Length: 140
Image (cartoon, rainbow, N blue to C red):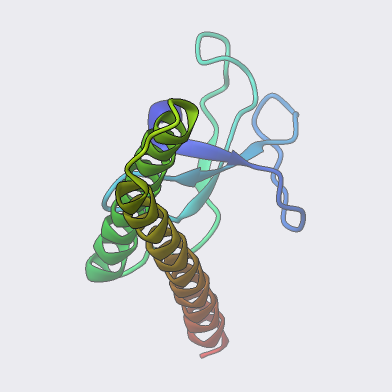
């Protein structure tokens, strides 16, 4: 699952794999489990004990898909922003005489930065909502 997960250094809960080692924590990035955390044996796949365990509860499918699509949108915004910054740098580097185009690109980059900040806040709030949801669910 290494191509569909990201490692995490988050402290807190830990697990020991069947090898007796502290299991690594990862965050899944697949569409149906995006954002879910799990433990896995730290050894390479060919010598691992194949220990694997979810760290948190399963999200409803619509929540997982929502998180996944928001991440895709956020990445697209980042890519567009970076392309516009590159274009702007090329204009400025070649002493472009058309300042109107440069100004327009600066505005687009600024708007994308604003959108990126909003998406980051939104994703943070979504994650906080999920954590509260799981906490309430485990208390019941």
